[in-house]
Image (tube, rainbow, N blue to C red; front, side):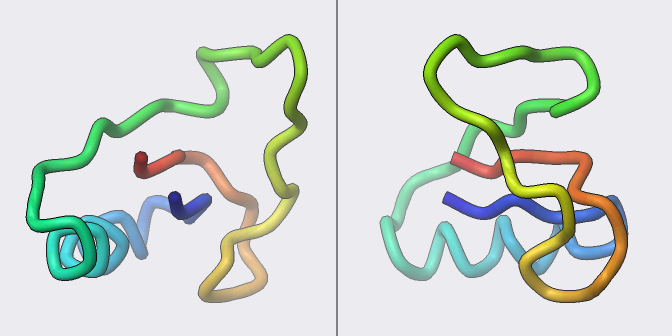
Length: 55
């Protein structure tokens, strides 16, 4: 699972496929709210706001 900015979505998808050998789901964090989980505020790969969840 990766929480990333728009610029790093492709890299996160590549990492996910390499690790799990399956296509991930992409969730827009601005459109989706989770009951029991708060996503990180910033991208895992840089200092920009996290906007997508790759799972």
